[in-house]
Image (tube, rainbow, N blue to C red):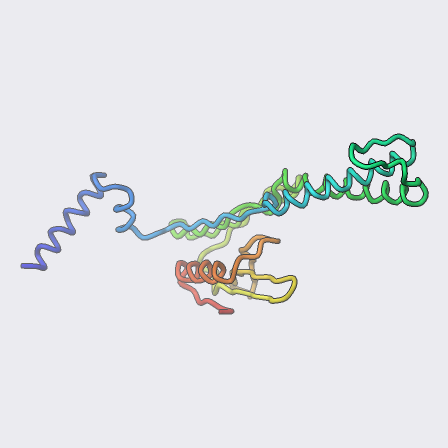
Length: 211
């Protein structure tokens, strides 16, 4: 009797899902996830904005100090650059200020182009994996790669400790090819990388290496 009630209630729920009378959250509880997408943050990170601003501000100050010492007119609102002799202090400050401005301009362009941003999409419906990244302007501005789910052999985690700590998730394909899935210059925490790698290996039903 109890089993008949369970079967009857299950059939009613299925009818409600087809009719659209159940809310979206309850519908998803009955449907397996077919597509996973992981967004990759590129150069538009807070740390890049911060350092680009600091370098721009400092380089501009150095350049103004050097120019002020050369023309004999104080161009800096704070301090007195006229007290600095042009050779060699003023010349060196102008040189380093110019280099700093060029570096900061390049950095601001990277932020504007958002190099390295994109997504990793794993689609069981189509049986495809799509790796998309924004690159530098030109032929390689759009990097759009596709792989078959059948070619995936394992998900690999590589962790390097030290001052330049690196935590990277790789997708190992047939032929021992390894495709990096994490963003460059944005190391995830150990907890986050373990969670993401485990979810991905479980979703793709492949082995997890490196943990």
